[in-house]
View 1 (tube, helix red, strand yellow):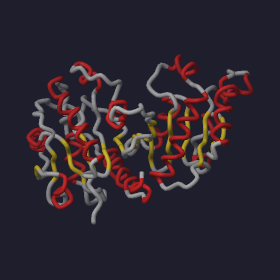
View 2 (cartoon, rainbow, N blue to C red):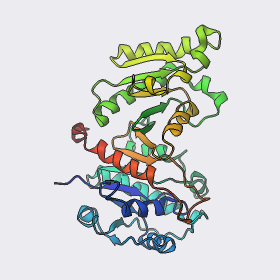
View 3 (cartoon, rainbow, N blue to C red):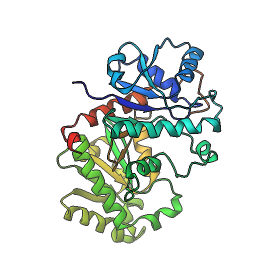
View 4 (spheres, rainbow, N blue to C red):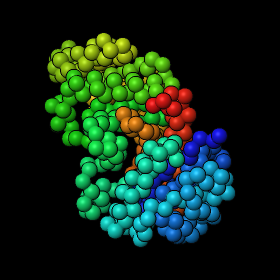
Length: 338
């Protein structure tokens, strides 16, 4: 039996998400893409295809028909909301469809109808204006996954074939990082990363390289005490748990090819420390992976790109990489018992 298809969410319909979905299906064979269905308004997707001159047939269907239909048409699962947004012109009225698409994708995976969630980019400001109560995409997914139970600790990993990086602190001001960085946060992040690399990526004993916070990893305290007093003890705690974590290393020495060969994932202390190297190496092919959820979630590593939406110049590389990685993760033998 073929694996269940992937659930691709709508994202913000005024961005490049709809056209990338169409392009990905059109290039499905040359890019070796798994079967996926878009959860969106089929009329809006058809209008997008017509506007861009894309000859992509669409078919409205249910989950059990997606694999059968995928070779001949792009399957679309209705989320029950009409979409009126135009390219490059975000519309608060489309927020319900964006949220409904995410909710439907999670439900499909949890019910076994889909094998993973692949999310198209959203614009948080549009959702906030419509009353969205969560800080962002990942937090909403964690809320849905918790289903009223204990809160989860989702971890953001950026992945490409040559590098995987995880920022321990994410979307906070740089001046707030030292106070937010604790031993417990580093240990919990490292523990989740090690477990997910084993479970979802088939790496039996993941090797984690941990960066320092300060230049030269603090240089023995001369450039800050955090690396000696926070990062190094956290690494010792991870090793005590049986996790192969090493460091803290100066971040400026961690990302050349020879260094990358020595680890499976780099644990960085803040957002740009992690994202600059991977976006330098794989700007168009990077994938955002959320670890620590009870289901697989990947996403292209870019935003809504309102400025180029509807112009026919957006590239589907990152979305295609996200689709392939989601299918690869779902195919891991351990996934059945996850």
